[in-house]
Length: 306
Image (cartoon, rainbow, N blue to C red; front, side):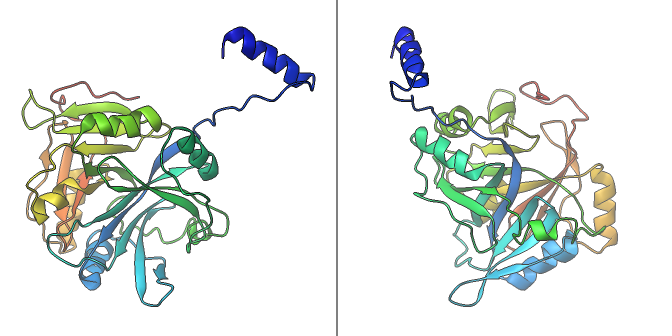
């Protein structure tokens, strides 16, 4: 519709003599990582790692409607969790269940995505935890959830609780997933959802192995892991991972050792110029302790603060 036709239609609608033009829904804020969902074959071992080693409390669990444990939650902060599902069936299976981001208006986000030809649920309703969420597929087939915390949910009724001093971190600063086709991932995360690149780098200066994509309305980011072929169980766990922000990796490392935690590799400075420490749960999923700011110049590209 040409501009003059739009103006005329608006004037007629205001006078009650024409149809009101449909407006494309606007994207609501997507403010950060909400959680990462991981599979385990040994819930007792997973509890030892996330509870004892990393120091997170387990405030609540959910059972399947048919009976038996569906998942348990390890609380990082009031808005971020590590969800663990006792459903890993084989060594070759991907340990990643899903990643999740928080929005302030889930219905508006659903309508916005539908208007951009993204397959979304026909309707939204509260889940077993009392929040409203929707699960989508990204171009690589990963489950991507968007959630709005609702009054009265398990999460909101426990705000301010289960936040012990034993936590190795109080913030999931990013999650990483395998990506086969960067252009396809960008069409979903960048063009539709509004994520923006903050850094890219690789094992060599002339190649790109990782792309950090910041959420549109917060400081957390999604890391594209651009290696996705010939994966072993260990490499899957390295690539599909979570990163926990800490003020000092060295202090965290010493605290973990004092707690009796066995760590296979000492801290190091990554290609992004940040101190990091890699740890692995019993199913080989990587938890990366990371200082948020570089201490050396990052390789490959500038790191954008915004």
